[in-house]
Image (cartoon, rainbow, N blue to C red; front, side, top):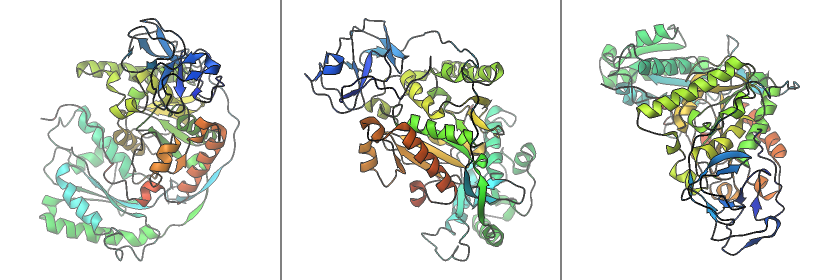
Length: 516
């Protein structure tokens, strides 16, 4: 029942066989019609794109198709050996999963690792040092952005010239905060997200700017989230100050008053147990579950052994592979918490007249992924082999050490926003199609799944995992390198997305429920 992502039993250089039980092979390159795969005794019947699947044997209609030794769908028509296996001949279907709660849980030898972190006065550890501006409602977004723009180094380099230890001033605005049930789930979710950002260690100080008449009143926001106004947490409204220009001016003066203290930080060696890494995959392709995701999983195992925390998320993208996580749960209770979130999504999709197999996206399918089952099996490889120690709701504060799961949608900006609200101070993001993404105030590391994307879009990619597919490197080697990159970037080295200024626009709290 284990997910096997590193076994290649085929000796044919043109394809990858991930598990002896599989009836599909993965194309390492474009496979032309008529190519004979000697080691598999299969002749390709039509051109197969790189990263896509070719049948290794005849598959009858209704028979399960297997990759990683796991079910990824069912043949919607007979499929001959050598035929392209994709959306035209594969469909979803129900099948039993053996949850086997805790059966594969195991102990992990501890190891030491360190990075240069920023230790706050209360003992929290940061990987970055920003001043943040949050909005209670969409109506104050323009004002918040205007305040932050005054301190942009690319526009006003003099504004932060005297504060080299401040990474920047960022405004994180959103499209909600009003016209919702004041006691409902939607507002509670937004408040929990804002509350998590307000106390994030990567912010030296935070301003909260509101309009004044919104449903999400700042006073209630702070009360429900246990926030207290003070020198490092300030709040005001446009209506209270007396208009847009006055509020912008007041906000600029507030930030100026905070910068001197924010600049009084220094980095010092701290244990990697202070790292909380959010795991993301976006723009996935047929190589994601073979290269970057298992390499990231190897790095996660190293992080967990060093006492750190990794947050796996995107609940719709573990659907069909959740049994591989429940087997590693430290208790039945933890495993059942995960299954409860799966059932919530099944019910949610039914109520919304949607289906979980709407994911994969068009880009995922172009890259070779056919069903959500296939995508999920590759996605869970990001979690390595570590025990699952707890399950959290969206944007809940993550307290446990080790591998945890947070319930989020599969949409990357929404998912990562929840992880950062929960405390993630670093994001590791794999991509096979070339996602461009950043996540202030937490730096984001981008891992390319294939050589083509890394070479074509190198300005956005931090790590190339494509060599795993062609055998020029290994999962172990790339995993060790990714872990070292985590430590370096947590220590202040700027990631590619930070160099491009990504982060403000990618703050996207999960909006759920009715807007009235």
